[in-house]
Amino acid sequence: MPPGLSLVHRSGVGLLAGALLALCACASPEHTANADVAMGAGGRITVVGPDPDFDAARLPAGWYALEVGGDAGTEFSLAEKQGVLALRLENEGGGALLGRHVRAPLLAMPYLRWGWHLESVGEQPQGQLLPDRPADLSVPLFLFVGFRGGAPGGQPAADWGNRAAGGNKPRFDRALVLAWGGNALTPVGLDAASAPPRLVLHEGLRDAGRWAMEVVDLSQLYARLWPLDRMGDAEVVFIATGAGPTSHRSVGYVAEVVLSK
Image 1 (cartoon, rainbow, N blue to C red):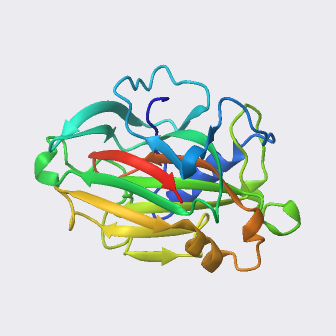
Image 2: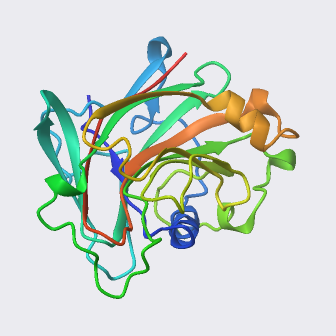
């Protein structure tokens, strides 16, 4: 099975949207089944294991990396955290992304499951505030999900979803961010007004220092956000996980990202 995945953006309360616009701008106009696309055989796709042979410097076909901005980004590596083999995301304040092209009908495989762990400030040797960064700039961990096929008329609902900048990255017309907010300025809950919409599942360091297991029904979120779409035609086409940007250096872990029926 191909190695694990992760995603990092140059984002924050405001900058997260800008980074995701850049990500969407790099989407490719192609959407055909091929050997590089992870299909939902048996009703399950393991997006991130991670695979023990994962190497972010040598991504297999079907995986895509993107750096946003000129700041120091995020380093991806394998590490064991509290007995769990995980993808370690060490963020130096900037942003980047690493994601996987998948293809699964939304209604047939709506459940996204994963585990993640954010280190507390006390565990971080370099947890000081980074210079020239606002204190509210903090999205230390997140997952990104791209959808395609459900938008009315087959057209993206926003310009950021319709800009193709070459390459072979999967194209999507809807997108959603599942975030671990860095502080009280990124409160828990669904922000449908952000671009793309964002569901914050944890706030700041309140839940840091331990593994948190998540299960999200993407079909319910999709129906709530885009009630006029053709949900029967919508597919999940891109899944990534990442970190940043943040006002502080941060370290997080992600494991067992699985899309299933």
